[in-house]
Image (cartoon, rainbow, N blue to C red; front, side, top):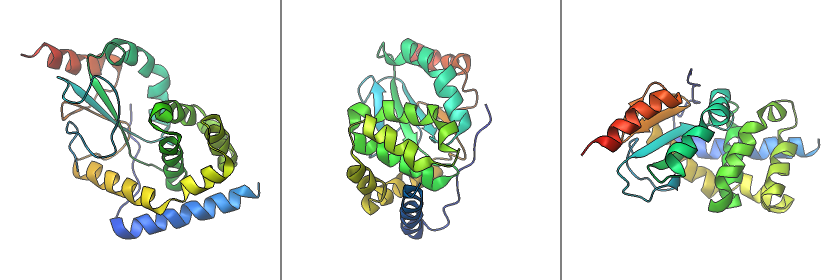
Length: 213
């Protein structure tokens, strides 16, 4: 599965302000219509086994990445049933926005504002709605998903323009870049990058790690 490239981060401090401004502009306009792949990191969103599990799988993905959406639809259900629901692994999802960057960031912010219990359902709903998101009415789609997660319009607007949350995301993205992430989706099993993101490819690495003493 081909990886989609992230946007450039020439200056992390300046990018936070620029991203926030772009988000605010997008929302206003549309309204008229360092951790490695295996280490725990601040802001991690996880499922399955508890921290310290024998095997940790980290996925770096973007809600605007078509390949990520395809993986969520085609591979994730069986992957989840085999490894997450059985607590065989700790699965960590890390945000890595790809173009259009403001839309990806807004989607991630909405998922976080929805709360830990609703984070993954919101992420999956946004990915499943990519065709609508790219059709010219992104705010309406994100607002609908936010409403479904219990956020009203005022909370939604505050969420997607939260400068502190955007700055925190900048930090997480920088950590991903430092870990060698260069596109999405990207997978690490116990800190080792896995090139084959199919269920068979991931299972080969995961099962070997589980079997290791």
